[in-house]
Each structure stands twice: as C-alpha cells, then as structure tokens.
Length: 487
Image (cartoon, rainbow, N blue to C red; front, side, top):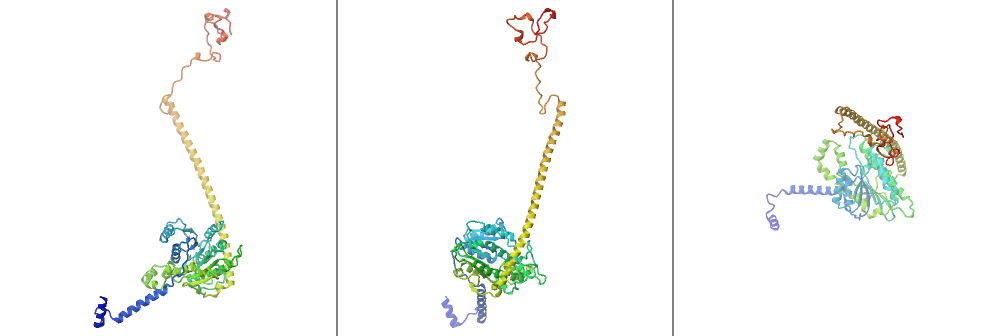
C-alpha cells in the first residue's frame, strides 16, 4: 500500500486532500524548532550512576520541587534517606508523603525528622541529637535543598527570632546545621566518601556585595529598600561563599590517624524549573497572575525545566565518582563543572567576615531565645503549680461538702427514727432486750439483797455459807436475837 501510494505521487502528483507543501514545510519547521528548544531548555541528563545502598543521606527540602525529584531518585537507588521537614513526623500529610515515596521507590528506608529552618533552636535540637552518639552515626551525604522565595511585591518577613526569613532559611539555618554537624562529618572513616551538596541559583550574579552589618546579619537596612529578588540573590551568594569556606575548614582539619579528609562540598546550579517557588514568583502570589500563568503555560513548559530534569545536575553531584577526588567546592551546572561568575565567592576576607558575623548573630539570638524559653518555662511551671493547688482546694472542698451532706442526712434521719419509735432506718423493728434476771448474776458481785434459803433447810455438811457465796441475811420470820449467824 505505501509503495503504490508513492508510485502514484511520483506519476500523478500529490492528491487533492494533501496540504500545501509550503504550509507543510512551515509546520514541520515550527514543530522541529519547538522540539529542539524544549530539548535544549530541559538540560542534560545525569550520565553517572552510583550504588547508594547503605548510604545515609540527610536532606532538606525533599518534599517539593527539585528536592522531591532528587529524593525519589536517591531512594530508588537504595539510599537510607532522612528528610528534614518543618512538620513533625506525626503530621498526616507528611506521613502519607513518606509512605508514597516508599511505595514509588520500593525503598522502606525513608524517614522524616522535624527541623524547622526558620527556627535556630529546632536546627540545634536535631543536630545535637545526631552528633550525641558513640560511636558517631554514619553520614554519607548532606543535601541542602531547602529554601524560600518571597514573590515580587511581597513585604519583608521576620522569623520569631527576629531574623529576616529569606536570610534565615536560605543561609543562616544551613550555616548553623553544618556547623553543628561538623564533628560528625570529620569523624567518618577515611574510606567513606562524604559529600555536602549545596544547590544555588544563577541569581547570585546580581547580588549586592556582602558588606555592611545589615547585609551580613540579615537585619533591616533603612538606607536600602528591601526587595525579594535582591534578598534571595544575596542569600544564595552568602551560601556559596560559606560553602567554599567550609571546604577549607574541612581541609585544614587533622585527623587522629593523620589521613586526609575525605569530605567534599559540591555546589550545584540546577537551573530554572517549574517548581512551586517559581510559580509563586511568576504569578506574584495573585489569582490574576495564576490565571495568566495558566493561559501562557505553554511558554513555561517550553523554557522551564521539569523538577525531574532540574534534579539531574544534583544527582550528578551526588553520584559522579570524579567529584570524590580532587579539590572540593566545585560548581556543577548541566552536569559539568563550571566557574563561578563572582570573584568574591573565593574572597577570604568576605568569607571570614561572613563567618564571624553569622556566629555572633546565632550566639546573640540563641541567648535571647534561651532567656525567653526559661522565662516561659517558669511561667508554665507557676501556672501548673497554681492549677495543682486549685485542684487540691477543689478536692478538699468537695470532700467537706460530702461530709456536710452526710451529716445533714444523718440529722434528718434521727427525728424520723424517734417518731417511729423503735424502728430502725431500714424499717425493721429492733429486738427487745431480755428481762433482767438477778439470779443469773454472780452472788458476790451482785449488789442487790438476796434472801438465802432457810437456815435449817440444808445440813451444814451439805452446804456451807462461805462455799455458797451468799451473804447471810435475816431469816424470814427471825430476829437478831435468834442468834442466826451473819457472814
């Protein structure tokens, strides 16, 4: 059939129903251009593979966006994944997500721990529990995908500890986490390859310089208006500067066995992807923006990566064997190593100032929060003590009330019983006491006067007045002159 159709086209030309060749050429060229653009915008796929079975991976931001796609791929390769999430592990939505991730990956070694990146105390609690173990817990990889992005036009938001939210989540919390986990990373065996994967964004190129107290600490700067894009770019630049400085910190550590450190920091630029944060940024957090986003979704699909494709560079940084050798602190983009576009990323003076300022900020914030927690604890204990005393008073009052009710009831029953005579409370008549019988009492201790039998009724040999125990009284009909002896 196709051969006959081709022969017919060669001799008779194209059929009438066939479209115009020029139009067909245009359509073909357009579809080809769209396909090539989509393929180019999607980026490269990860060419490396690595056996992740038995490897322990700590991961922030693993519940949405690029982090969720990377978490799924790592779990499929057998990694023991610990997701650090803002919600507690008992949260029903988080528990359902973990179960779904286990089912899709076929890996049961997926867990969740509560770590709120907007709270330094929450970060310290988890990191302290992790390092408080002997021997040190196994740790093969730390992936820091957690971040936040305020849409354009948004207002400046501070955490409960008084730090700007973007600076806290994107930089300061990661600085605090790696600082506390540093002993656990350095304590890993020499033959265990440890990697710290730090995703970044190309927006760091447009970041202002990291100078000035307000910039370094994330405090409010009245001289420069706060903008969401500038704050996000500044936090990413600070994270890159810290990552390079942290690699130098690991390299200068001298192990007790005098072997070199086998821990390396890898920076990753995953590119622009259709994540929740990007959608909020494009729509500006409004319904009108969301409607426009849906109308022009084709362009978002064409030029923006999917979360799965954006995670390829991150997976390359986690699996490629060449990154486990040589210097650390390298930047990966599209699964290849590239150079940083900012020179201040490697500036030691900027890194030193950033490190020291971050330490001072964390120390000050933690002291203030410790005082507040101690005060709140005392107030809570005081309230509990007052509640306990109030409960005791209520219990005593209830007991006194019960006693009063019992006495009142008893007082009501007494006259009722007196009216009924000898009837008891339950309606039964009391038993009559037996009549008094003096003869049943002992004759010596009984004080009533009893007359003994006549004196001559029994012979002296048969009865003795002393043995009888009776008190002699005057015989009936006798007198004192009759000579009747008395005992």
